[in-house]
Structures are given as structure tokens and as C-alpha cells.
Image (cartoon, rainbow, N blue to C red; front, side):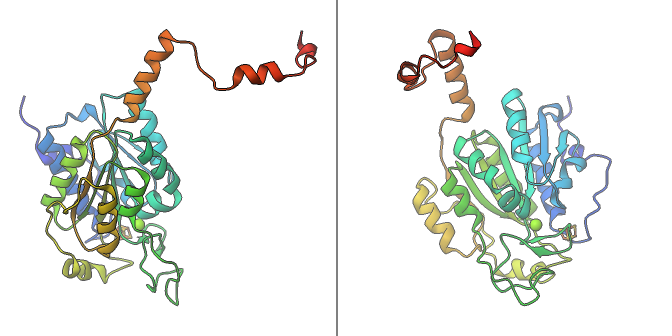
Length: 292
Ligand code: SF4
Ligand code: MG
């Protein structure tokens, strides 16, 4: 069988993103990563929510599901638990992942589900015409903040780390090759991976087109404290969103491991519900008599 090339992962649909949108680079990097791993397309599923970035499942030749806003992770959770042999990649925007779906991110991370989340973080809601998002910098002008944003922005890496993610990294969409390397590491990681990708929205934040390129420290090495969660949080909090690369890696039991262990117990032991015997003993005798 001939090896798959990056372009073999592209579907027949042509992206309808604005010319210059950072999401082109993310799509490019994803196909490079899939080719580097030689993932079979029938073993790959891309799950998304809603937003410009969430169109990605349609552009990739694999299984895919373009879900509803903020709910990509519940969909991906169900898929991964029922089809553990699939590689499941979740593509979201900053509004989708950190605001509307923020609660799902927290709980997927603490469970250590074996999923790879690629968050195209452009600091704005692009598809719905440029409203402030949870990562919009303080004071920035958007269509909903005509006098500047008064919200302090969320730090995605600190959120992911505090929630229990076991692989946390930041990339930049204009560097597809090093970004693909991060994606390969994230997909290979057995557990919950979050890669926050700075991906400029050139229509509603045109200043990011050159601003990010000039300000970022575009070296993709591992950060110094990748085995210490608290030091990684300190690094992520202190860097003002300018450093790229891997911030944290931890090998830990996945949700599926715990699920399988529970299933084994269920075959051999009675269920243990703490306190149930004493609750039943304390019930008045009259309870349930109507049903008898
Ligand atoms: Fe990209 Fe922004 Fe255009 Fe959406 S609105 S396609 S995020 S440039
Ligand atoms: Mg966005």
C-alpha cells in the first residue's frame, strides 16, 4: 500500500475561510501530522462544534461530525468510549472551547479522556462577526466592546493545567511544520491533550496578522518544567501568551482504563453503595406498602 501524503487527507470541499485566515495553517498542519503518523482515514474521526474553525471536519477525508456550539467534547467522549480504536481529534475555536463549551473542557480534562483538542484561538468570535471572546485581551475593541473590553482574558493553558489535562501545548498557525510536530506529540499522547493554536482572524483582528508574528517567541522547544504541573502553570501564567511549544506532559491512567477496571469489578463483586444498608434500615415500615 502506498504511503498516504498530507494531501490525501483533504476532502473535495474547498475551505470557505477568508483569504489569509489562520485556520488554513491549522488544516495544513493537521494533514502533515496525520501523514507523519500514517493514520488510516477509516480509523480517524474529527469532531467539532460551531464556528469558523469548526468547519474542519468537512475539509478532511475521514470520519467527522460538525456538532453544535460548545458540545464537541461530549460528542467526542461518547465516540471514543464506544469506539476506543479510533483516533479522535476535536477541533474547536476559543469561544467554543473556553466559553460555551468551557465546562465540558474542564471535565474532559479531569477524566483524562484519550482525546486530542486543537483549539484555534483567534481571540474573537469570528463567524458571528467579531464579538469579544474569553481570550480577547483587556481593552481590545471588538463589535461588542466599542470602548474596549473590560473583561480580563482567560489563560487557556492555565485552565487546561488546572483542570487536569495531561498534555498541554501552544502553537502558531503560521508555522505549520512545527505545529504539525506538536500535533503528532498530542495525538501520540495517551490521555487528554490540549493544543492552543494562535490562529489569527484576519478579518476581525487584522492587527494579529503581523502583530503575533512579530511578538511570539517562535521556538517550539519544550518549556523547562514539563513534568511539574504547578511550575508549568506558573510558566504559562507568566509568559503573557507569547511562548510556543510543550508546557506539560504526564503519563496517567485514562478514563477508559478506570472504566475497564470498573467493568471487571462488576463481573465479580456486588455493587458497593456506601451507606445504603443503613439508609434502608432507617426507612419507616410504611414506605412502599402502597406498592405491595
Ligand atoms: Fe477566519 Fe476570521 Fe474569516 Fe472566520 S471571520 S474565516 S476566523 S478570518
Ligand atoms: Mg474564535
